[in-house]
Amino acid sequence: MVEDEKVKRDAMAININGAMMYPDMTIVENASTSKDLSTLVAAVKAAGLVETLNSEGPFTVFAPTNDAFSALPEGTVETLLKPENKATLSSILKYHVVSGNIMAGDLLKMIEEGKGKTTFATVNGATLTAMVVDGKVMIKDATGATATVAIADVKQSNGVVHVIDKVLLPSK
Image 1 (spheres, rainbow, N blue to C red):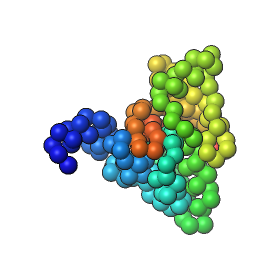
Image 2: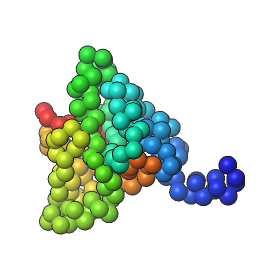
Image 3: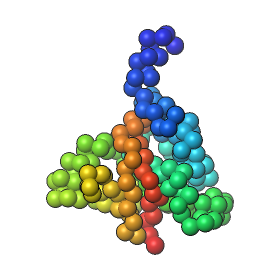
Image 4: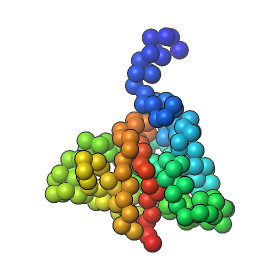
């Protein structure tokens, strides 16, 4: 790659705690470079969703960090990663994915038009609710728990990622 092209490419990337996320790479390719998203990547692999999240999309992914997975009750992640729990894991991961490209500005507009909140369908068929609390975009899951969008608008070749601080659950 010519030096000027590398500088331009790096200028378009977003740094997530030392891992560069490039807009010309897929969701899985980028997430695989991040130490903070390694649990998510392991879960995507265990659920058999790598090919899907490497496909054309576009997808909007609310990506939980390793700390978000660590906050689940002890043993939850290990249990979900077992082959016999693949369907449950897949459902939970698909609950973090929305079809289309929903940038932060679009989400804020939807929240404003919804008079303070908006709902949208996830790939697993359930809904999420987004709202703004104390100036931060929050995503509420089916259990009533909320995740904060910590890093927004991480552009990918097949969509966009918003890094969140909690794992969203489709039901109790």
